[in-house]
Image (tube, rainbow, N blue to C red; front, side, top):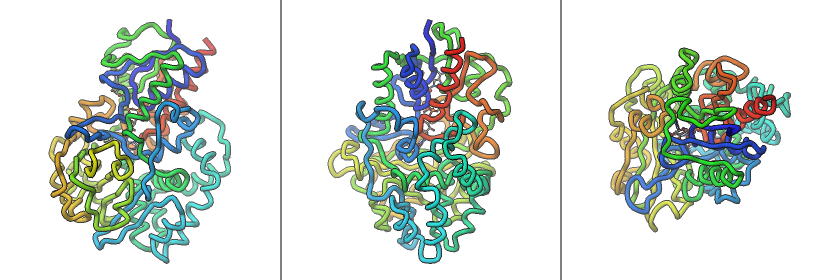
Length: 469
Ligand SMILES: Cc1cc2nc3c(=O)[nH]c(=O)nc-3n(C[C@H](O)[C@H](O)[C@H](O)COP(=O)(O)OP(=O)(O)OC[C@H]3O[C@@H](n4cnc5c(N)ncnc54)[C@H](O)[C@@H]3O)c2cc1C
């Protein structure tokens, strides 16, 4: 009998498997797709030689993840590549605010009236970032806080809505850039704890940057899987689990799936019936004939570029997708340009480009025209550089990965109490109604993103049980 079986080889499932195997437990992973990776994968989606990340591409959370930093992933081929700027937020007049590695450069891009306010916001947390990241990503209760005072101070600043926090700024550049950071997890700008979301992204940039993985995000998953195999674990692909009976006998089962799928597979009835899914995204992967012709020079050297003319435009786009059930006319876009630092992604002189905007849950339309009209505002001539594009709306995203219910790439709305307490309001989120069954996907804290911390935290709950039984 195996000690643990993990269902799903996304970053959290693989991390949970690695953490258990490192502690001497026998582990097998079962993955529905033909390759490991879940939301951290790389494929030639458009033309030969163009290597796209269909899901995650920018990795502020992975490089700052306490779980990943404790694993020898570099030995298994993971290499982080940094653009000159982690992120730029261009404006229609050709200027840009930036999230640079240095606080000073970032503050300066906000203009003289907001530079001091930004410094005062982030500087107290930066020297304590590593302890704070661990404490914040281990909530609730999976580890005693290392620095409870800093965590409490962070809570005071982070728990209120971002609309309150951005009142510290007087001008649009800082307010807009910060609103864009919150929108990364598709959270409504006025929602609970949205200040914390924006702050985490900003602090992550100053601490270690927002890199891409050399060769693509698949490198993260491949490194985790290779390490797991070296530790004696096994990975079985093309194996969709539909019932618990599909799995070999084990002392514990760990699900890197949505709560809905887990309830169906394990027969948990309505246990997760109150869990809410959020809006979807419409993703486009481009093969380009050259770099994106951004007007703002800062955007040309940034790994990630946020697109939204001002805070109101970003708020309108988020509301349309999350509350009004319609696709935004001017979608807020997150774009990533990995090939400006990673020559392995595209043939010489060519580029891959990654973009998505938010759409309603389950939306079946085509956002391509709206996305490209937005891009043309900030990069005139963009369309002329397009060699090929691969699009995926909510139905395609959900078909490729069952965790993205209705195209919700966060596997559950990041709003209300679900920001912190997911998939249920409990202090033991990784446990389920069955003592031998656990959940470790991004539907558990600390939520969406490639950081493996849900897997890491869940593994702790699993090994406690394995040692007891
Ligand atoms: C378009 C897009 C852009 C994103 N951008 C970023 C980004 O830039 N940075 C970032 O940090 N995050 C990003 N994310 C989010 C990130 O990818 C996810 O939060 C992360 O992958 C979640 O990890 P996970 O292990 O919980 O689940 P997943 O990565 O979704 O993995 C779950 C795995 O379980 C498998 N599975 C599900 N059900 C079953 C079953 N019944 N049987 C067997 N296997 C099953 C799935 O096939 C999948 O491989 C993005 C996601 C998408 C889709």
